Length: 134
Image 1 (tube, rainbow, N blue to C red):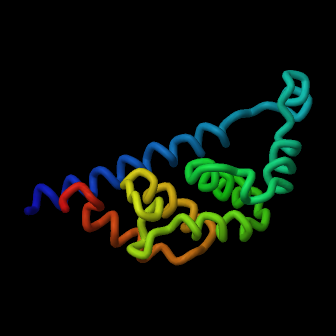
Image 2: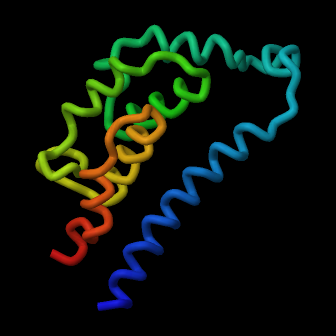
């Protein structure tokens, strides 16, 4: 029993570590504004595009979670995206509704956490092992 509990925590920790490393790598670049626009990338235009997108345009759960976390990084209001994400939440707190998966639930939890939403149900679902253990 103890081994199963440890493996659940290890899985959650690994998922969070992987997503956290993407954020660290993205923040450690030392490009200047001129460097970013000369190679075709303009960070502000990217944020503006996301901010001005309708929540229904964003697509699947992965895209919605990443948009929420990216826009929160710039303190941009994400409520319309959070509302769309909530439509995909199962009553048990997992994601997506009716077809819960541990990875999708972890993404939903990260998006909720980054936007100061209640993560209790998603966290409890993951701590119970999701659908791995019945």
